[in-house]
Image 1 (tube, rainbow, N blue to C red):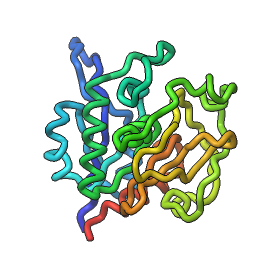
Image 2: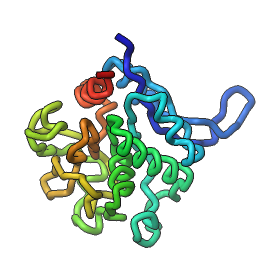
Image 3: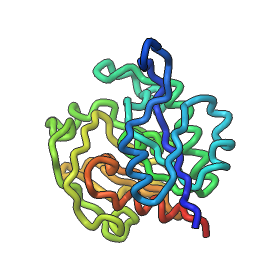
Image 4: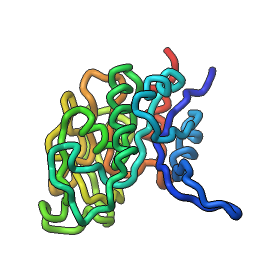
Length: 228
């Protein structure tokens, strides 16, 4: 049986190799390794023209919306937040278009960290632009914490009802996008997992399942992406 092909979103960044410095497509290798370990074939997607996302999708069995720099608050009606890195407009445009197209096409999607925010905004939701101001603590900036997960959700069926995670983030889900359901929470009730109702597999998590030994969410993505 052919292994499912999973498209992984990426950065465009200046990179150096040998004597050259050029803009390059950059993806942390953890994503590709986790997809391959789960039985899929990883393909890195450069954030180029949003108009071409349907062409990308035709060759893919599933999509992994990867982590990275925070989503531009202007895309969900909030002012620019000076305490975060400058948004990457080309990546935001491409990934929001890709998320919308993947949902419309019924492709399995795993959205990781920033990817969960992209998915939420793509479906009409909004984010908290600077989370520490809202929760009045810094546990979301890097401390390990336990996430409580709905056991009836796709995430819960993959990893159980609770998980210890390290999920550094400055933004968080505020208003859920159309059709999204919150299925995992931190102890302060910040949403850390979502899934799209009625979709065979479209989930988002605030943490990074590509890091560490627990590969169950990647396995769930790859399994959902297998041809019928």
